[in-house]
Length: 134
Image (cartoon, rainbow, N blue to C red):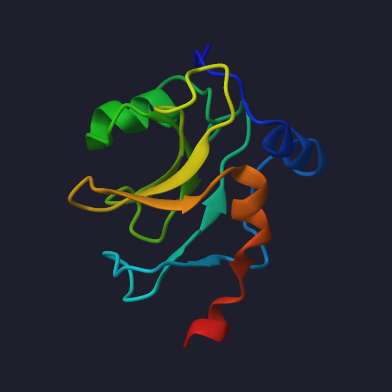
């Protein structure tokens, strides 16, 4: 339905828990974002199916989010952020194609892409407790 192959690490995570709020919710960046001078925050990782799934239809899925918020059409919205749509985190297939291993990017309010991780595994492994960044 999405037109992309989901990364094995993402599918493995969804097999353990189909979306939700991670314990470690912040990802350090080398540049300022619309959220903070040195990081982005994840309020939830999107699952599959259901009302909030990446593949959901009816306004809450990835394709609808891209259309509604004007995100670059590089892949799949996988995380919600505290801004409730003004920025997001996506799997970026622009370099690997729809069947490849996507990188993870942050999409800022001005729709600038900020590279976060080479793949989903590296993204999850580098999430930190937000208190570490205070």
